[in-house]
Image 1 (cartoon, rainbow, N blue to C red):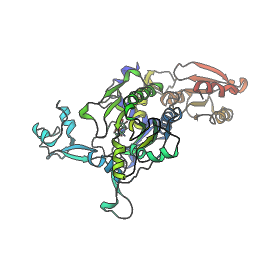
Image 2 (image 1 turned 180 degrees about the horizontal axis):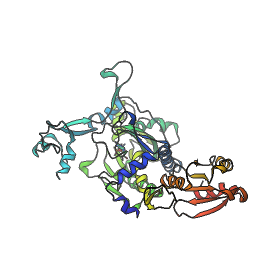
Image 3 (image 1 turned 180 degrees about the vertical axis):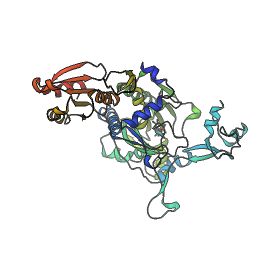
Image 4 (image 1 turned 45 degrees about the vertical axis):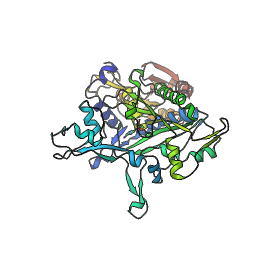
Length: 462
Ligand code: GAP
């Protein structure tokens, strides 16, 4: 069965969700209590995969760029930030409720489903006289529902102690703009990159980790002279696309989508999404935005601090424009899982396997949670095989697996995307060599134990 056919299955997402649970990648949060909607936990292999993804992003954005530095700001910030950023007023979804069945819907989704322009101003919405898609009941007027989670800081639960969980990591960078500029040897153009949790009380969460209420973002804010904004917007668009491709994502499944003027969010002057062809309707993987001087101007106004830069080269004092690249760790993790998922004819030799096909997760080597699996052919070889494991695990993430038939162990490692399986057999005791199987080519090499480190260093490029 080819990769394409298997992904067109109606139940393809079920296969991904089931694999993610069965093999310890992603679990429904609070499952023993019946679960909590749209929150997920990363299991032992999921956390390795997601951390590898974050490492690859930080390498691309910070390590390989002289002019991008890192930051880790708080999740809770001064509530005035959200007033300045426009989130208190503008970060909302337009909602309607059904007066009969009490179900809640996003007004823009209802209009879209009818092929109408998503103009949800109450007067416009009323004109269409839409009914509840579930029970045909009457709908309420459109109301704005703010997506920010609110909590209280300190002992008092009052209006003055209200505080929000950040809905994007970006603002933590803007309010530290001066600190970074003054403490580091940076000059315009330069960027600040940050990975961290963000929270949104999404009305229509779903599609597994695609749309959650607690998720993680990888954002980079690039500060430029206003006249260079268009050039940098284009540059970052291309570089971000190249990053997904460099980690093996299928080029045919990726594309850019420019936002039309009437769909731009309140801070954006121009926006493009990098879209992945997910097996459901939503597509956005990452957004690249020209935020103009909107954010820093707003923070200057609300904080009464001077946030202009004195650009000695341009001999000008100005508020820089911001080009933002904003990706989701969870969406990227899901896209890489989907992209890597491949069904092949049975190949592991696992006699207990109930299906005619097996799953191979063809993850890029940099992303694979386990890099090398050490599989002794018999429990009697435990001591010597473990010595090989002890040596290799100091260099990269390895797994030592001695239980079950060798076929079963191969199948497990194919399913979790382990690029190399190494078998230690009885001959290994004599010739001091092991057999290394390549996940993708199925080629087997007989390699001297003392040469294993070099062998893998060459293949992992590190
Ligand atoms: N700072 C700009 C910003 O936050 P966004 O388009 O709202 O822009 C950026 O979000 C990225 O964050 C999205 O492309 C997506 O990858 C991720 N993201 C947003 N909401 C999400 C959610 N509810 N669950 C998972 N990922 C989400």
